[in-house]
Length: 168
Length: 168
DNA sequence: GATGAAAACAATAAGCC
DNA sequence: GGCTTATTGTTTTCATC
Image (tube, each protein chain N blue to C red):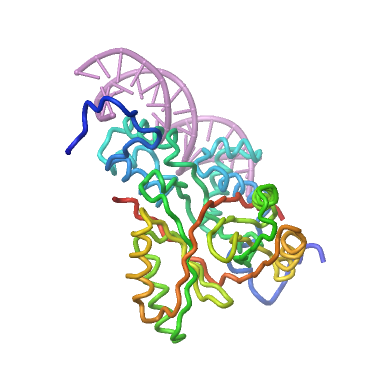
C-alpha cells in the first residue's frame, strides 16, 4: 500500500507528523551549526528564505527541535574535571525517586542525569573545579541523601561528542 | 598580591586568559539559548551591540565557546531508544585504543563517547530505532570488535539535560 | 506549501574616546 | 576595551500563486 489516502476511521497522527527530506536536512544542518543563518540554510536545502523560515519554525513548534545551546569548554570556565557517577537508589518508592529526580538537575555542576535500566538507577554527569570539590559534591549531595544507597564515581578522561546522522 | 603587573620573566598566559563577569554572563546566556540575537545579548549584559559582538567573537576564538547545536528530539526522527553501553577493552595497547576511539564516534547512532576511569574503559551513548537495531549495533560494532572484551547495555528511561551554572 | 518583494530589524565596520 | 554612527545584510511579513 503506497500512500493510504482516504483512511476513514482512526485519526490523523498525533505529534511529530511526517518529517520529509528537507526537514531532516534542516535538522542535520542545525545540529551541526545551530547558528547557521536562515538564508544560508535556505540555500543549502534549496528553498526560498521565507519558506525555510516557516519550516524551521514548524520544527520548533512541533518539538522536533527543542532548543539551541552553546557548546562550552568548561575547563576554560574553571571546571576542568568531569565525572560520571553511577547511583543506586534504595527506597524504590515513587516519592523518593521523584524527589531525587527533581533535586539533582538543580545541583551545581550537574550537566545531565540519565535514568537507566540495569544494576544502577541513575547515571549523573557532573563537572567540578578540583578533586576536592568533586568529593564534596558526592558527599554532600549524594552520599548524604537517604535515598542513595550507592554512588560510584568515574572520572572522565575524554568526552567525544558525535554529530548524529539524522537521515533515515 | 592584587594584580601582578610588571611580571618580568615567564610569559603572558597561553589560552583562556581571564574571563570576566560579562564573559561568564554571555556564556551563560548562550548556553541557555544559543540563538539569542547579539543585540538582545548586548542589552542583557549592559553593553553596546558592537562591543558585545567583539566579546562573543573572542569567546569563540579562544575556544571558550566551541560551537552551537540544535537540541533535537531523536524520537521525532525515528530513534525513540537511547542506551548507555559500558565497554571494557582487553588489549590495552595504544594502537588498539586509538583505533577504537577513532572508529566509534563515526558509527551510526552514536551520540557521545566517554573515556572513563574505573572498571570500564568507555561509556557510549547511542540512539536506536528499535530494540533489534540496538542489538545489531552492539553485536556488529562492539562485540565483534577484537579490542572489546565486555559490553553492557543499559537502556535510558529518561535523560534530563541541566543548563550548567557558569558563575564562579 | 511555496514564492518574491518590501519593510523591519540585526550584524558588522570604521572612527573615535 | 568600549561607544556611536553608518552601512550592509538578514529576518520576517504579506499578498500571491
